[in-house]
Length: 36
Image 1 (spheres, one colour):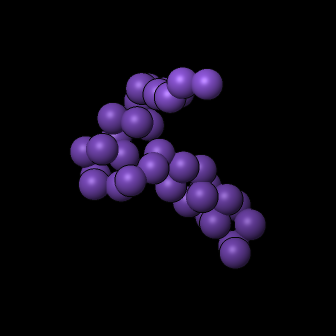
Image 2 (cartoon, rainbow, N blue to C red):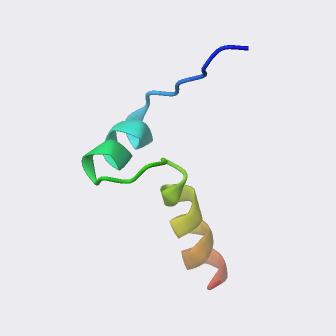
């Protein structure tokens, strides 16, 4: 198994905004949608 790197729009945006992972955007969407 090798390292799997995804470099898409969210990868670039996360790197630009100093986030470690791009999953922060999915978590924000869940937070807004379900008010958690």
